[in-house]
Structures are given as C-alpha cells and as structure tokens.
Amino acid sequence: MAASGPDSPSDFPAVRQTVVEVRGGIEGAPGPDLVAEEVPVAMVYNGISHAVMMASPCDLEDFALGFSLTEGILDRPDQLFQLDVVTVEDGISIEMHIAGERFARLREQRRNMTGRTGCGLCGTESLAHAVRAIPRVPVHRVPGDDLVQEALRNLRNHQPLQKQTGATHGAAWCDSQGRIGLAREDVGRHNALDKLIGARIREHGDTAFDDGFALISSRASFEMVQKSASVGIPCLVAVSAATALAVREARKAGMTLIGFARPGRHVIYHRGGGQPSEECEDE
Image 1 (cartoon, rainbow, N blue to C red):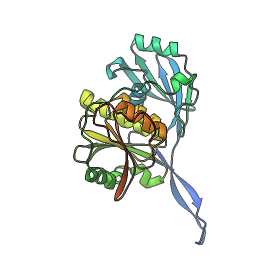
Image 2: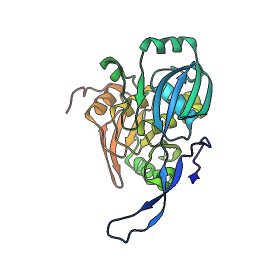
Image 3: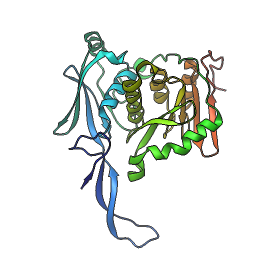
Image 4: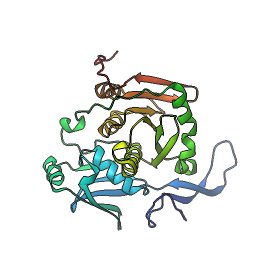
C-alpha cells in the first residue's frame, strides 16, 4: 500500500506502508508502519544524463532547479527553458532543456557524478571540482538568538514526511522574524536544501533570500555552506554540528554559520554580516 506525498509522481509516492515487527522490551507483534521512499532520479540536460541522485520522489521540479543552480550548471533560472518529470522503468528522469552555452560548459567539465544521500561528491573527477571557489554572500543582519529558537521550535510542524517516517531531512526558509515561510523534505540532506532553494527561486526570483536565514535538520557540511552561498543565502542554521571546512568556507563567504541548534541553545561558528573576515585560520 502506498501513501501519497507532496507533489509526488503517482508511480512513486514519497511514503509507503510496510509490515514490521517491533522488538525490545515489549511483546513483538506484526503491524503496519510507514517508510520513506527512495528513488533514483536522473538529471538529464539536453538529452544527456549528467547525474543520478537517490531522492524522495516529491517536489522534483524544485529539486531540479535548485540542483542545477547550486552545482553551477546554471548561472540563472532563466537559463532553464523546459523541464519535464518523466517516470521511467527504473526510477524518474527529469528532462531539462538548458541554454546552449551552459550545456557546452557542462560537457566540457566531463563530470559523471552518481550521487547518494550521504555524499555530495561521488564521481567528482578532480580536487579542483571538489571545493569550488565560494562567492561572498550579501551584507546581512545576524539573526538574534530568539529568532533562531523560534524557527527551531516550529521546524517539526513543517516536516510531515519526517513525522510519518522518521527518515527524512528538512530545509526551511525563515524570515526576519524567525517565522518559517517554506520548507522542503528529502531522504538526502543535500537534496532537501536544493529543493528549498529551487522552490524559493521559482516563487520569489532575485529576492528569494533577502532578509532571513535557512534552517536545516542535518549537520552543516561544507557542501551545505557552498550550496547556500552559491545562491546568496546569508545565514545557515543547522540542527547538528558544522565541520571545520564548513566553518572555513563560511568565513570566506562572509556567511553567518550556526550549528547545534537545540531547544534553549545554539553555537555560532562564524558571525558574518557581509564584512571580510580576518579569521582565515582555525582558532
């Protein structure tokens, strides 16, 4: 039996029901449970498959646009001319028609990347491709502690798949008052952020990330910082820790990076604001 999810192709619902047996301190008995679906999703540009990502089969148009921008395949959303989500025998194919100059650049890169939910670099051909130059984010106000905590308190209310299955990550955009305006979910943390980015840009264009911050339910790895900076997200708040490379990248970008966001406390790894940081080495 299948349960539908937000914007899911009918052949691949985001949640499915299965029979489980619960053990451990209680009497075991078979019963139904809901599990998150995970589907191969091919990113196809001008007829050429570029990447296959394991993802939740929902909000895929958002995912395709966000991925294309944060991976540097597109510079601007208007370079994506057409997008079709097609169910195929082994998964889902997202067929995109992009500007000729962007496709030519993509072919020159000769990158054949197979993505997994826990890794954002599988198949990267060189070290230069692994850690790209990071852009500086706009001048911004660092969110107050109360705003971070307000957003954190409400995050679970915007994670219906996580409530059902306990298996998905969330990414949310929070306004200047700490209110969550939009959230996306996926079995992969990178995918959830890409979906959020695509959704915001589709709806708000150039003003998508003005005056607010992104909140993610995962750790703050350097890929999450890179993806955020690539579209101008000025502040990233993570429920779990940041890595050392993520902190260094946030400093280069002038980004505010906050982690270990838990009820009543959080850690500011770097206070941005748009001014160049003199803290270029590990403290």
